[in-house]
Length: 216
Ligand code: SAH
Image (cartoon, rainbow, N blue to C red; front, side):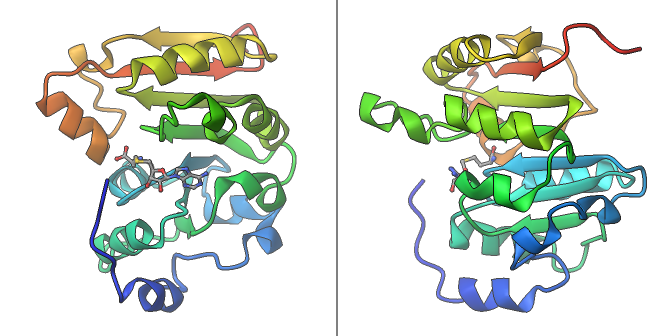
């Protein structure tokens, strides 16, 4: 997605101390303070913020931590929630390759990967958010019964991810190759998702866990 550069982005990010966590490594071990229920959810690649903002309002008891490396996108998401932020919404404006330094072991309940960049070239495989090294980081920072929930329009990234997870220690708990053929009021439609739905494209979705059986 090409966007005109936003000259106001850096100032907007710096001014939003209500939402933006500028030194996330200092928060490691303390994220649950933003959660009434103790549940901590993280979205990697939150883009312009629709999912982050609307999920945080839909689940006010949980903490929602968005991670977005693109400063212009991050600033747009902050602009969208100027008047309707809440204490459970936090944003990290940085690259998720550092995620292990921001969270302690067993700290996260759910990681959402929504319409992640597909990085189709072979030489760029390591940049995919479902590449082995990312999965190892997620494993460390997720709680033992934590989940990774992925949605994408990109069939090749989806196929790659299914293999990547199954070559690590993960169990596939849910899978859909047309997630939006049913209503899912419990899950917000992201900006990319609504664009692909408007084009009639199917949405692929999968959920992975490290535990094989449902605990309850
Ligand atoms: N989740 C949004 C945006 C999808 S586009 C939606 O569904 O509408 C993918 C986003 O992920 C882009 O904004 C990109 O900047 C961000 N992104 C990609 N790799 C990232 C990384 N390693 N760390 C943080 N953000 C990343």
